Image (cartoon, rainbow, N blue to C red; front, side):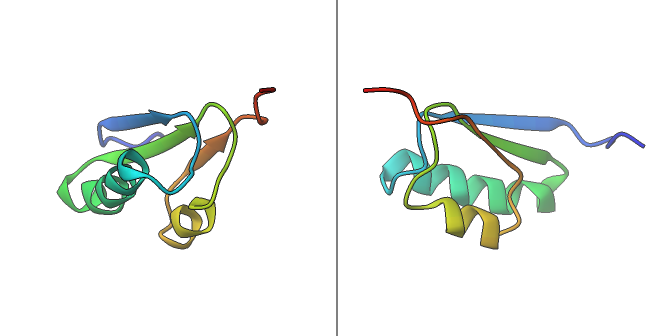
Length: 68
């Protein structure tokens, strides 16, 4: 059954340790307590914070790393 909570999708390039990634982790951890479902998309691949997102129970979609 689909969730009746509004879905907030956060799109980041990677999950490397930087300011945006830390803010998104904090939001993704807290928004469910305020009635929102969350999903984080890492469009350019994973990163250093992937384990922290997973440990917090955040749903992730990680694209293959982009060629640089």
